[in-house]
Image (cartoon, rainbow, N blue to C red):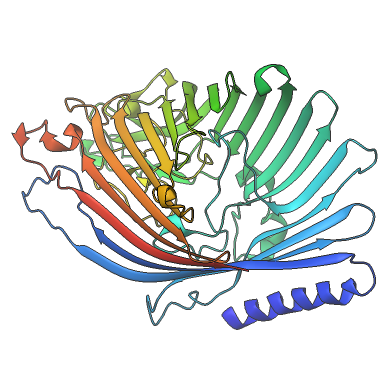
Length: 495
């Protein structure tokens, strides 16, 4: 399989090169090679009922590679192709996907299509709006070869069609993306005509209106994000009938899960009220229908149902650059709110669901806890069965700063970045526990060895909060709240 993928990639490159002699005005080739050495001290940071604390260490090496081809064609047409490979060194001798080459980006841009203000982009492309609060990242590899460290993923794009209408006073973006093409009858070629029906897909729609404002170098945006996930699988209910002899022996019922459809409307803005001070803010409201299992009072599945979605999300913050200070330090402060539910009440919810669900927000703001529960195959996951993902049900306060620490000695190729994050659940995932999820400190030191080579060292520490320190069923203290540590050295070569 990997040889076939490599051959396809080479054929595509050769095809571009063949066309170049006739119609391509210019082709630019670029890329990067990244090497990582990683050490982690990771605990499960949840209450361990057996009082056994396992604290494994993990040491590994990884490499990610990307190769980019950008072509300027005739008549305002451009194309981009990004090939990637990502692997952990000798992760598994049987891992046939380790050396595969994937397509992270592949799209065509048609400028002034039909008339001058319209630009259309078709294919696998990045989509990032504002600060990525509701739409910014899709690290899930469609081929399923994402490895343990999703944080290092080279995949970040969407299969989408984007139309941009760029007028003098405002810009409108219209986006459609196919997140997942459901295949109800995969492998059943006798019914191939039904294989790609539209009743089991996951689709995304996005509309964004941006208006720049002259005063204070400001901008204002309003948007709509629609997500419709229909292929939710089936649920088997408990036996409910009296059955023979008065026993509940009737066959269980298998029901299809209702679709999950959400609509998010929001507004964001930014401004520069004084020199070197950037302020921003965003607020969004989400509504729709959420298909889910239906439970009885004993937590038995008795069927399926849909509940109404009603939830809020918001973000506000700013950055200040000390332009006249040696080292040009920058300080930032950001507060993020994503509404959530009490897990104990959630399965029995009969009214509105309050989880603010935006699965394609930007990548994590921190090295460790911000990845909790996000994406497939991710390394950092709390083992608490009631825990919620860090991208919902969360108050987050993030303090950040960066400086050139050796600027006093006229050395401007060393950079130091620091982040402190405070995490607190909006609602405790387990009733009776505290809401404090934890604190994290991340440090990053980079050295521009040359214009093309950058060396880096990052370190992260996560202190599990009081939520993970008590078990309300036994009121026993002393949970596994041991410090979680992440260290990573890296070398990046760009060309």
